[in-house]
View 1 (cartoon, rainbow over the protein chains, first blue to last red):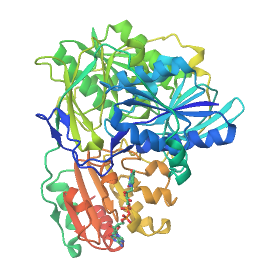
View 2 (spheres, rainbow over the protein chains, first blue to last red):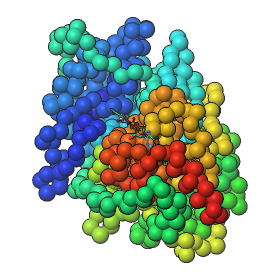
View 3 (spheres, protein in one colour):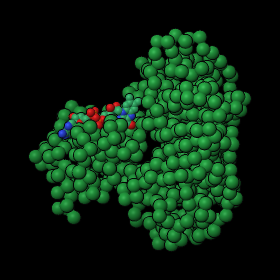
Length: 245
Length: 324
Ligand SMILES: Cc1cc2nc3c(=O)[nH]c(=O)nc-3n(C[C@H](O)[C@H](O)[C@H](O)COP(=O)(O)OP(=O)(O)OC[C@H]3O[C@@H](n4cnc5c(N)ncnc54)[C@H](O)[C@@H]3O)c2cc1C
């Protein structure tokens, strides 16, 4: 089975976000980057499926060279090789076009990615890629089992779960508990160094959206503390002051 | 020409979040000098659909095909594209949800349309078409210009105040709509849907009462459920709680769970880790109950009580009951 796992390179979940250059760029100073947490689930499941059925896992990242340590980490976790499209994509559409082009050149049975990146949170790349390739896409996928030609998927829907039977090829946006995050071991880290990381140039596209300016939410006012002995007064305040009851 | 709003249906009626999308669409239509048309897929009650007019839509396109009753991102995207082409729509509006993102994405690829997901404002048309959206899990916003001719906006909940006084008794005109459905979109079979039908859905809820590891165990949830029931609220939880199987996964709120934006979020025994806050920072009012005065959640809260949840929850439930 040939599996493609797409990963993002995003600020650590606890990172304090600020902007520079007149609020037109993320301030990367002091920010540690990680593989997107949802992508980590996709990668972990991809590696398990390879162990089960044989085949290969290729990691794909659309982005610049500063993501190479995260790509090496994915190789250390168990991917066989990696492709980086050397380019800072304009938006989700642009990212999807770059992914779809790589997928067209190589034909994968399964394309896995996180349900969304935690930087831009758009959650639309899997759907865009699926449509561009003309194959089904499902998200957020919490369970994925393959038996011959049959793919069993469970995905989260509003207030519950939907169980589906589908067939390959598929594009899936993953989330927990599809697998447990994997931590690279020493052997993985050593072998990752010699695994191929191919850098390719992007296809150019028409600009569809342009991020203009970034901003931060207004600072929160002070929290009004209510003594535990008068807890019931909270309900009055929610009704008369906050007007949410 | 029209602004096209996709509307989700629940038991034949328009979902609450979708009324917001209609009101948003009607505002956009005012700005662009067009009208707002609503698209409804699957079986629905026609008198309920006409209510789209109360929020400013002039027309409802209703595809009643049985096959569309079940959520299907691919067939829904196909139908949306055909409706947009029939209506000559330049702006498409969809509420953010798993379904919303899936169909918006596939429709964007079909139509070669610029897509912005997580929109938090009405468009600014003064120079070009610009919207603001939430990024970095609610820690920042980006103002984005959409340059493509056709634009798809996936909007977050609670971003416009639906002014009750502007709701009219005008009914929308309902037109049957028959999209061409492709067999290939129905190749995957839905085997089973597990849904807690009695529960209030988290994404729709105006009030959420949520519990963390401070609730100590699944057997202790009753006081929290009692408060939720008195308030007519949905219930949620932090990640360790669903990881430990104290509560079902679909209640898990946060960066890796569901993102919610109720009017009132009551957090009981939740520390307020940044990953949990990422799922609740769209809430209008946050109440935190925690026995640790240093719990980080208090920094994000509007009201706080330092104390034991098991003593405080019953008092709050009683106070709500006294109110009614
Ligand atoms: C990549 C990543 C993604 C994550 N995503 C999420 C996510 O989506 N959602 C999420 O919630 N977490 C997420 N987490 C986990 C997050 O970091 C925290 O570990 C988690 O939110 C803590 O849950 P908690 O507050 O319930 O538990 P704890 O941190 O254990 O806090 C329990 C709180 O209860 C209080 N308490 C105890 N007893 C009582 C009592 N009797 N009365 C009142 N208060 C009491 C304590 O003072 C404490 O503040 C993520 C972590 C990572 C690394």
